Length: 250
Ligand code: ACO
Image 1 (cartoon, rainbow, N blue to C red):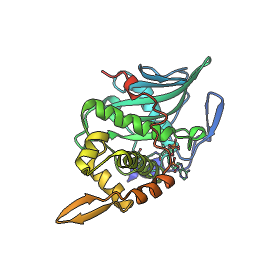
Image 2: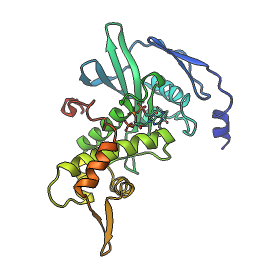
Image 3: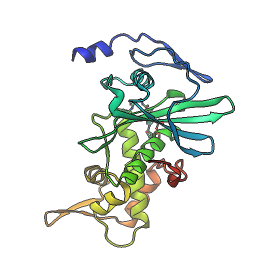
Image 4: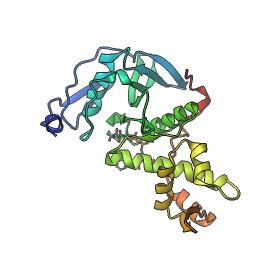
């Protein structure tokens, strides 16, 4: 609790300058000036002007810690990671002839007992509400698919985090249900999407697409109800992630 109080005290850094943006911060953090022109680590995805870099916290400790401090400027409830060795950082950049400019990132534990595939996600404010959050979420699930695992984000989620995840899960599941002919189980949906079964169940329950019959949850996807939900649902984030096969991952 003391640590929490420590890090929610009065905002100390008013603005952050990144590329052509001067960004007003939201909360207190220990962020300092960073002179790097592009993230360290391997570029593991490129499509058009977008590149994703994978940064190992063990090899780039200070960079990893600075990313956590930067995220803290926009997050009220997360504890900071000093021990970044155990994390990978996926840094999304928009690149132009002046270099690679960070748009957002997510961190991920190298080994998670709780099947977390994302620890902390941030889109820098000038880039928010353009679909990058869902792109990052989509990317985290593509990595899980490559690992042959299902994943879920670390809890608790912030309000904006929950909105983004709900939106992503809704869009991805509705798209599959719309195309699929015949019955489909939650396990099958989970295998196809790498989304954890509990998250699928809660999303479909929220959409009132689940009935409880003979002690089992059954998906009841009436085409008219699906169409109504699809009209209301936002973008999935996958439109941005044009070619997941381009993720170069060891
Ligand atoms: N008000 C209302 N809805 C919003 C807002 C907002 N300010 N911002 C995003 N949304 C909703 C939209 O409905 C959108 O869905 P839609 O496309 O269906 O309309 C959905 O969230 C996702 O929008 P994106 O543009 O894909 O996401 P964005 O790039 O804005 O990033 C994020 C979302 C990462 C949560 C961003 O808001 C952020 O960095 N917030 C501060 C840090 C934070 O809270 N991180 C999550 C913590 S939880 C965790 O890390 C596990």
